[in-house]
Image (cartoon, rainbow, N blue to C red; front, top):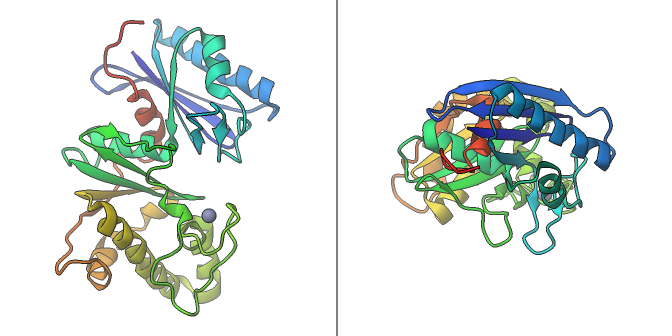
Length: 283
Ligand SMILES: [Zn+2]
């Protein structure tokens, strides 16, 4: 069976998928300590415990923020986890005595939705996460596209397109740059605007900014569908209000990219991580 792990800033979620895609079991644990060695032990312990619960050895896939640098082998851009700048893949494989596959959590989200979620059957899928941060992933023909540096789909850290004078240059971002999409479209950014402008005006402004950010994706990738997850994706009005706004920005007469809400919600992370392996592999 396939075991998927979603590594977050404060907790680890584990699920074991049956060959048909159903969940055999699920576990969740918080870090007792954020010291690397202790957090590594918790992660390995959860995986072994889940395998024991499942009653068999599993293939292991892990989704987490950031990436594993293909050259150094170190975790990068996973600032809020205990594993940043550490050789997590090497150390975990040593503890478990087998290969572990890693991918960015937004890529796992996109994969899960493309395989059997809201984007099932679409060839080119862009998965957008609008949550505490803004992430994204690209899946083509049900295969994740990681990219040369492992950052494909990271639209959150490019500037908001078609910035107005009022928006320019934008707030300082955690990445050190200014005006990143994440600073306009994350959940916390949306809530700041709501407190300043009220719900209706804040949402209207949010929708126009989201249309601009999606239009950039459509101009570059032209996906068959955009799937939206994360806390902000729960606002149903987005799916009615954003598509008509694309016309203002996309470089074609009649853009008709469907924008849909994720099917699996918070479970997409563990599901996509498990799907980093094919259904049956010799273990
Ligand atoms: Zn940034």
